[in-house]
Length: 178
Ligand SMILES: [Zn+2]
Image (cartoon, rainbow, N blue to C red; front, side, top):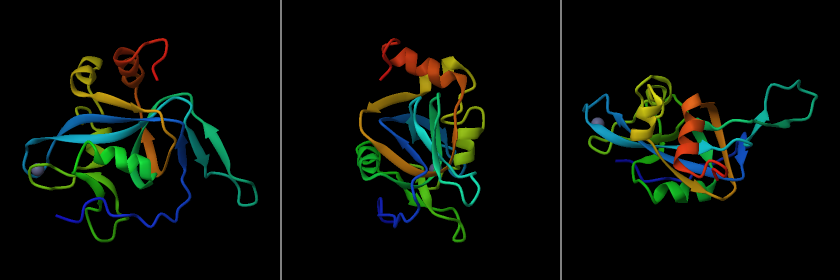
């Protein structure tokens, strides 16, 4: 097994920031050993900000505020408090890459065989750990833990769905989900 949670030389500027975050816990079936294994993700609340990287070269960079919750996919660098919180849940979330040419990112690894879990399947394929086929499935499978702390990350992108808002409203007081 690689060293646990090595420090990333994070020279990229963060492109996501938030006043708080959830760690979401679910399960994913491993493509290598076919066992179900826990998987973890960072979920940002409505009001999180994303650096707009689509601006012209001579224009200043701007933070956009998003009015929806979003899961971060393929995280290249992460604030230290978020790493520490994640470490309290699992020993199988650390910086890795599936091949040597790829940029390493914070990945979930199978707790049975150590294989890296494919983020595309976790977030993008119906039935994946954070891509439930129904609200009922989301409710049964996904647990959320809120942290009222500043968060930043450099991430390749996000994913979301109508079920996210429903799940938050269901798990927390509807009038004050945070
Ligand atoms: Zn496995």
